[in-house]
Length: 473
Image 1: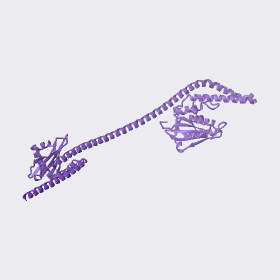
Image 2: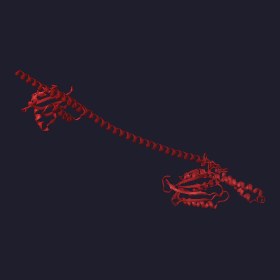
Image 3: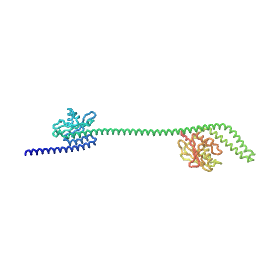
């Protein structure tokens, strides 16, 4: 009977042992599952404190630690500092424990062990568990935990899981450090790129501005060169024309003395012939005498024009005269003297503003200029058509008067030659009328321009004259 009871008792103990072993196996399996989930979680965490807080929860599933702390290394001096402590109020007590273990070399020895190291605590009833945080190339830090000595089982297989968790924490912290370095590098690189981009943009803007200024200066220089070239060409043309006129004047001066005396003698003889009784009694001779007188007068005018071409206007004769008074005086003389071929009335057009300025002119020469221009307009206009004398508004220190006709106009290929000496498109013309106009106007500091009207018919001759008191034209 006793043997049966002993057998039953042994069997009962065996069953209890198996049940306890089964329970521990289930707990270990649960721990493994939790550990796997923990590893998956911390691989996505980039913050040290969050990694260590997550590790604390996993470790407390293994052992009933009273205190947990994680120390990380300072790479600048290889020292260890508490980066996480739970509870925070026990930080000083944990630090004291660590300082003691450093002093007795337990801490240094633990760094070389890739497993939990159990050491006595300074506090009664507690035991320290130290575990190095390391990866293959680096020591990351140290795990420190305190546990009730009575709850510690030295052969507990959960120590293996603790090592696994600590190793994963080590790699997670090392990865977080690498991520941090990469983020810092990326941030630095981004800042440098932004800085360089701003510098490049500034440099590009400066270059674009410089190129724009250079183009502007180049265009301005080109414009100035063109203007200067035009001015020089104008001066050259004026000089060339002046030399040509000077040569004509010298020739005319020499010829005039030789020609005028015979012309005057011929004219005197012609006038005397008109008084002869035989001529009066024979009217068939009179047309010949009239023709001789007409041609002699024509030659006399030609000599006068030639002499005028060779003589510039004396600057001392330039005075300030109202352009309106000049035009009114001319129109009165022209309209009152319209006979024969002069059958074109002249009408004055002038605004009140344009009438005010005085121009610097030789009053006799400007009358001759207006006469030649209006006479030329009349020669190319139908009899009875009106010629307009227009005083334009002042512009750039000059006052302008325009002679506008409704005649035949000037062929485009010849309009630039009409002021050349001896160039004429009119039968019987000398080709000196407009050349003399150009010479006189330029001698008075002015300018003449001629163009065909648009729309036709006719053309316009514009005379620009300096205003009294103005230094520029």
